Image (cartoon, rainbow, N blue to C red):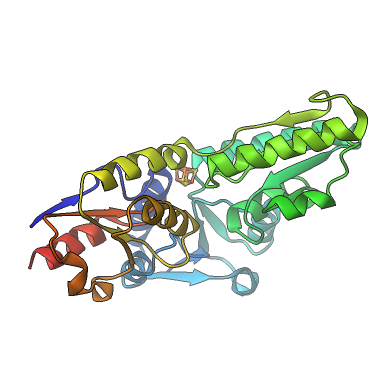
Length: 289
Ligand code: SF4
């Protein structure tokens, strides 16, 4: 049986540089705090925890003084930086440059649209760290929409500027934007005049779909490795499963079942943007044994 790991899977560059930054800091200290999971993968979080990284929440950060705290690739709202300043905490900023640029664009758009009594709309997962960071750029004035049902909360007579969380699905974002366009048009008969749509989905995420499905076509069985709390992982897995029924979601090698490999000549291992390459290699090794 042949075992292949999908070359383009694994950490995106935003996550790679965040982890590099953490590892660099941990060379000089045996205790470093990180606000939220550095990556949505328990195995990688455990590996870094064994080196001295402690995951904290905002409540815990409020109690800290005179220390260093890592901000992960998802970014944070301005209030977190203000808290750090107040508590004399040095921020180790691992915000992904793509997220950072999006935060700036959202902030600029907010200042612009505010003059005309308009609204910033963020298409993303409510409560997700990146979304909280983006809403923070608008003094919490942005409206977050996660699905078509949320569209009823928008006032279509006002100017609107729509952005997406970087890891959302491109087709679903297009469908949401199309529906908004229709409702704007219906509101006053002038389509597009007061509506700005920004495509802010990360290319690393949008290109993964085609790469994964092509990879799935080249194997008999796909083992999709991801943490259960990775939104990118859950989405890519469901897409792959629809395309190829013999796709299995695993987080560790313990999840693997022997019967999956009946009459299988080629096994493919793939993962989310939060899945470390070392974990996929470990799984490949386990399957081959
Ligand atoms: S998915 Fe894209 S935007 Fe998000 S951390 Fe990775 S590179 Fe940055």
